[in-house]
Image 1 (cartoon, helix red, strand yellow):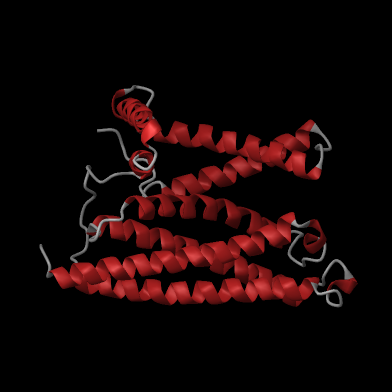
Image 2 (cartoon, rainbow, N blue to C red; image 1 turned 90 degrees about the vertical axis):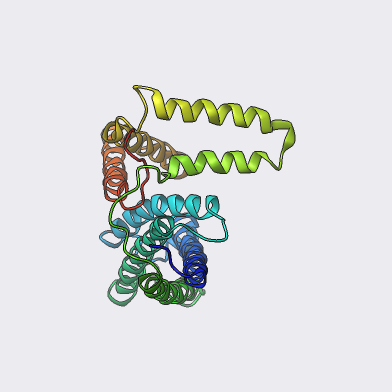
Length: 279
């Protein structure tokens, strides 16, 4: 049922505001994650650099990378003045999933600060502990603001639109939106526009008609993608931290990472419409 224009405009504005605030919260948390896991001098002083807190941080980062990535692609692709209700729902769902994950990891980090001593006694004196606490405060504040705006957007959506009763088969998935973003970007680069249009057309045709399309094998695609991510992360970890102690440890780490990626894929493929079923 069609609603008054002002309701639809308010829905779009509130959804975009929540998405933008969610993006700020994601960036703030990414800063916390990067500094406390990749900056070695800070990581050495972090109370949540060891298990069980490190497990929460690691799997939270996996979940966030997929959820935030998919939601960012969708938000950037759909810049029309009035969002379709189904698209707005997907964006709000992604923001909500990201904020829940950030909240859980922050709760884990705070519990580590309260109950686990810093690995280095001089961390408080040299300012490293203060830096960690400051990053947690900034991340928490941005997440709280984004959550408030998301709650407001959901309330506006409840008034402005009727609930979506069924999934429209024509609704784009993240793959469609990625191809659309590539075409949009090529418009600003005339020398490559024709090449990009041809390439995206080939990819689109493959996704639509090929027997090997991920849309025809969504589960298999998730398995292959998860193990590729696990191996890539293991290789990156070896480059940053040094060679693995043994092949077994490398394989175990890759399997655990792949399991986390696959679990996130299964949990989000429907709500975020990562890959829609084949026609």
